[in-house]
Image (cartoon, rainbow, N blue to C red):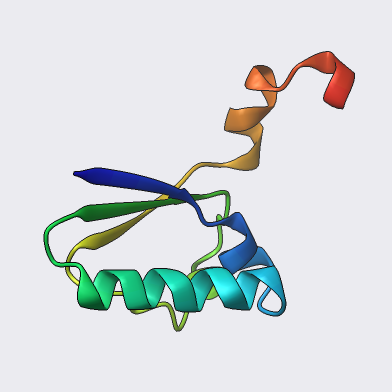
Length: 77
């Protein structure tokens, strides 16, 4: 199965929910070799991705923040 995870907290906030998300994903990838994990985020700089070694069945996919804006309803802006 392919599992998509919103990894923004993991890349943009390295404490609290970001730390929790990182460790949860890291352990899921370690114990579950059957599924593929796709981590979606809006980090655009390489330094934001430093230190996130997750494993062979996880892939980080970066979307620029501008790419996501047209999809957000005006009421939330």
